[in-house]
Length: 189
Image (cartoon, rainbow, N blue to C red; front, side):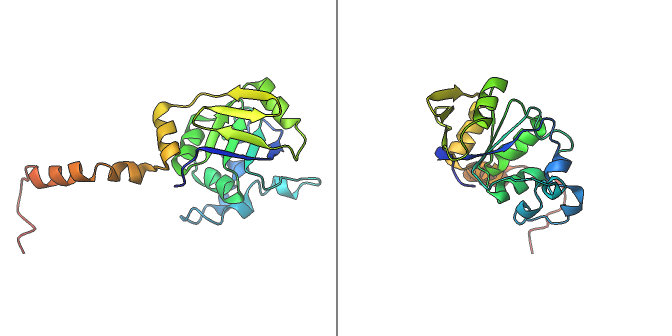
């Protein structure tokens, strides 16, 4: 997983609330277990609507309750594969937000007013996200956001669940050497 510190770029706007994971990544595309290749199916049904336009920018700004519905991991995979590094909304479904942070996609909750201001920016104006200082900067505005300290540490250091576990490799090996084993010995061959 890539570490996140700061990045900037223009935003893509999805001015819809209660966007559920089936709208983000419809069920018919959940047949793969790899994390790549899902971007082309992002918002599949909506992409067929006349006038649909969702530029491939690093930041998606959306309405409240983004990522509600089922807990499918494919929704964050698709968003990241499409090119998004962060999603900014007034609120997120808890499981969706957790699934995002596990792959290095940053969910940022800002106030309704701040989200509306981001949605109304000139499409070419860059927005800067600074995870270390927990700020989103745009124009002359600075919006602060909250993030769990452990999650922030993992994202700043590019640590997924496996990398976190491997940090304890010596302790795990010592435990395995020293733990009591009951039953027949199967390693004597």
